[in-house]
Image 1 (tube, rainbow, N blue to C red):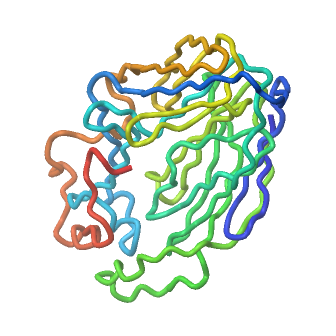
Image 2 (image 1 turned 180 degrees about the horizontal axis):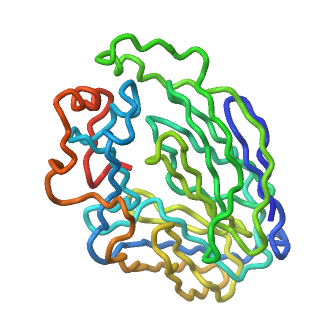
Length: 314
């Protein structure tokens, strides 16, 4: 499989190449509909925490924190009733069906020192645009991942828009620079190893910036909404494997579904919440005093741009 990054106005574009088998686009006359809800069963995992005294950026990125000297990244977006949001749902076992939708290419934005969205679905031969909207420079480091280990895809700077101010004379005015303008474009070419379909992007300057992508081979996929809901339409009659994917759940949740001609099938999928420590920098329950944050350091990391909530902020 190949990813090709192509220059577009205001960003970096990724193009994915051919899968192991070719999907055939046909007219589906008796297609059915699959709708459902994905719920996380169990306690929502703790977010990641990044101490801003060791990862300083006093002018912008460091001004987005919980007010206690921590930048928060919550990979699990879950509603009050367990609605599992922003997870990828797709069908496996379909070698021919409806055409891929001709839509605007997926876009990943570096915005407020996050890569958004956190999860992205990419198809073969489709571009993904990456744009820096922040008033600071970022550095994209992309890796393909698998149980065999990671491999670097590319490492390129993601400059900010030259119209952003560059002289921050007074750090207390950092919030004044909270403007979003697309930075200049770039062009790269990388290849995914055979059999790999997951990649992650991180920022070399700001460790709390990450975004995950999964490559699909047919158009029967969706991302869950705020209610944890998804809908797949024009599904050819048959029995398939329904897969729920989240980058921090090691084993994807699977369910066998059967779709009849012009039938509508409703399903609920429970995803067991992962337990134990998922990452080395898991947010701690106790106070932050062990980092000995001085009054002067606190002045450098006041959340002037945005104060984060531990459970809800990406």
